[in-house]
Image (tube, rainbow, N blue to C red; front, side):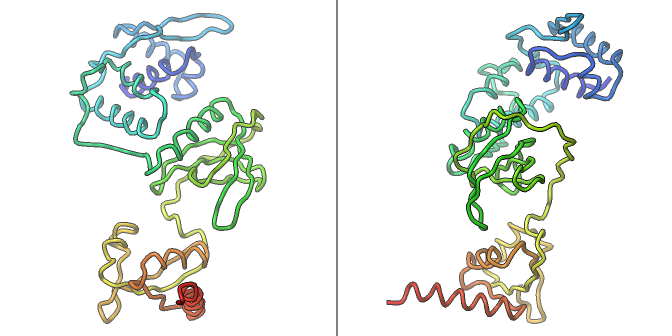
Length: 301
């Protein structure tokens, strides 16, 4: 009997008022009999679980119950609490603090790993915290959400069926089915305004598994070679990794980029100032030169 399944079942019971044996069996891909055995084990550990049979029945846990920390090892408890503290960094509620209290931590935080501090919020915490709460509620209630979206391609009004809240590429996103594009899309929370729960229910559909894309900028088909000054080597390593760094025969940093589109590629190169130079293709080099002339013209005295 694996401890992770026991902790998982206990976590579900703490979050939901009631859960059926069939729901748990389907979630953990085991038989109903196995779930009953897990429930008995939790009961023998002193956890007050109540069972109601018949229509509308299921398992529930006594309200206000606190988990005995001896159920988990210190290492396991630290991992759980580090995760909860990281979620608190982007929450405007006390939900995760209250959940930590259920682990019998109270005012004693000696079990936490004080050497690890995870802050998932940005400079403006309010830019995502309220949105996360709205989207979480919509996902739980299977409601659609609407919002104005501001992207390099312009502004648009969107309605989506939200399925996942994702922290990726150092930012928060919502992934779901876009009713306008009739396909699954991901939207960055900081680019969303006027976010609302429409109250309209999501359609019943087969939802594909979300597969994270490790390379944010490789969906497009543009390729360019860029030469960088050695003074920005640290930034390239920070953003792409040491294996990304390549040198030409003159020992200059010269790397090949794949990017989603030309305008956003130019915006990225501009952030390096005079420490980057587009080498090829010639058309991108010429287009970039024209862009620099337009910028320079704005500052003519």
